[in-house]
Length: 362
Picture 1: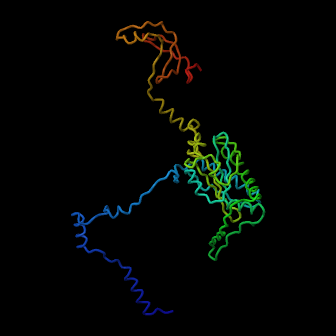
Picture 2: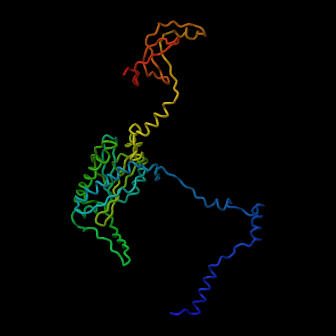
Picture 3: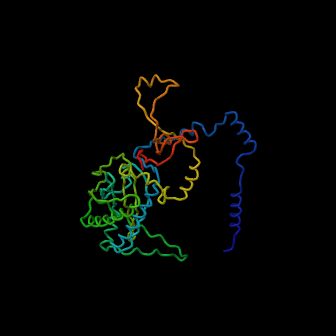
């Protein structure tokens, strides 16, 4: 269709609208600056802006990410990989398991992030004290049950449009809420969780040898867990996708349970021990070799009554037997043993052996 004069008018109007317009003239700018300097015109710190400040309360159960737990994230990734392989065999379909996130939160806040109904397993992780919790949400259980009994087919490939871009799959409709689980669902959950716990020992073995054991099964994580609502827990969340359906599994580790290995969980997954790193060892040996240390030689000990000690004055002599053995103290700690004598007219200590940390001979 040919351009009309009407189209030309609208184009010119668009160009005019895009042209920058001066908001304040130079005289108005000068007057505004003069008013600010004189205090007549207020700045950004007026009471009007203060009125927009809203109070905020940081409650004990608030979500706070204290650390990223990089080594624990690496462990969770290994558990996810092993779980995906085991569940794919169990369900005879492809299962994707992802270590979604790891964070620290109050127990009440961690439970609030889950959507009921939930199956809760109370698990012992010997030799760690206390109990961990495994939370299985309804969406995950439904996906596992349907795949186990063959109610779902393999997840279809995404269709592509003419340009080659994959079209997003439609989300499944939400399931209606329910209040209880069937015996078949509980049995499938039992089989799946047994295989999930089988991944704990090999995934944690480089940090600590754990022996997981299911102690009890609950349907309310706040009942029978033995965890106080205000106690902090580390939440390891796993996202599981089975034949087009997505659910979540959460592993809750109370701080009191992992207190003895907390530093290791916060350390890098590939951190090397200093004593096993030749680079660091060479650096320490190079710089420590030139470090000055205070040394003393203990040649003898005598026992004096307190009344004699308080009357001592410079020049008094303390009788001691001629020493044959002596110990070398470094920084006030006896670390070597030898003999005491003279050399070239001066007192001398002849080194013979190192002492162990407890002062005994090696």
